[in-house]
Length: 96
Image (cartoon, rainbow, N blue to C red; front, side, top):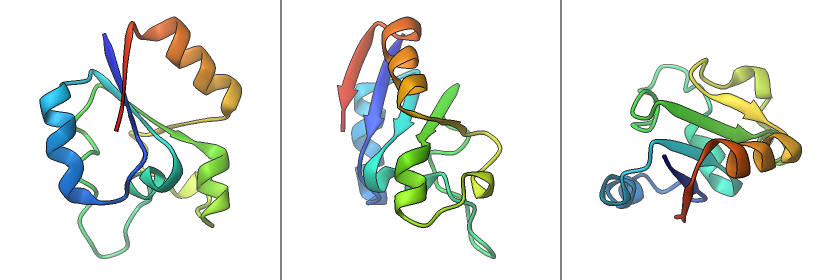
């Protein structure tokens, strides 16, 4: 299984993920904005698109996003959990 690490909050880069074709995505840096629930608006197109979607808790907190306020389809990980996912659950990684 391939894993994409998404660092951008820019929605037009989603087609890059489509070309890479990952099975799972980890949202880090500004990419964690895709995990946040939007009040009155549509969810990020990444939500529900991948079988595994993760967000780094430290990056959520740095951006003022409460980890409990992310979409329920996103699993929030700390750095230790991130390392486990990268090295135990996936074979290939694409940084986007």
